[in-house]
Length: 205
Image (tube, rainbow, N blue to C red; front, side, top):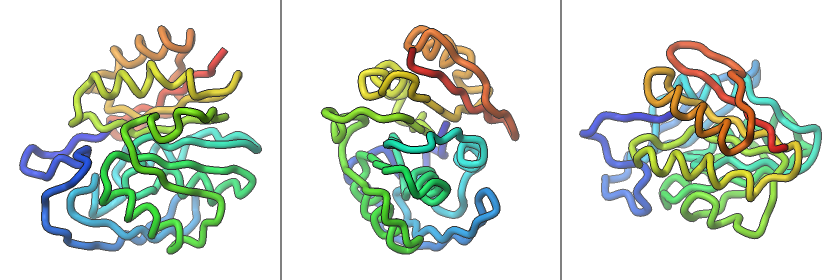
């Protein structure tokens, strides 16, 4: 789950006000090299944060079908999913127009041809679609109601047996979110935990 200092621009804003300062991240995820263009006004612009990295390293992807990355930021999770399984179709969504532009550029930078980015609030850009897997590093600075909405509304956009996977800080709402997941899906397990983060996984019954 994402959290940044109050002095930083609110990265869940649709139109970030901060002056654009571009950056480049070079990293390895699951042993593969990635390059991400980043900028001020988006989450974790200097590195792939620990929560995102844990989600990427542990996420369970379907063999085929469609994957949704909710709150994609500059696109690390969705792009990694697309690279790890070229048979998937990955859709990434974010309300932040700057993040959406960056994610589109990062698709090209990483030579990904099975992913796309859509701009809008949570599931609105994919309201008529269903997915075999939903991934999210939720924007905690937007408030717990937004995080709750990502969980509660997810099943409506998922196929039977689809997997929902979300990374959270263990100290920030971990127990509450597990309860929400169990209420929404009827089940919730810890897929991975490391460095103060945990990845929850739930299956749509």
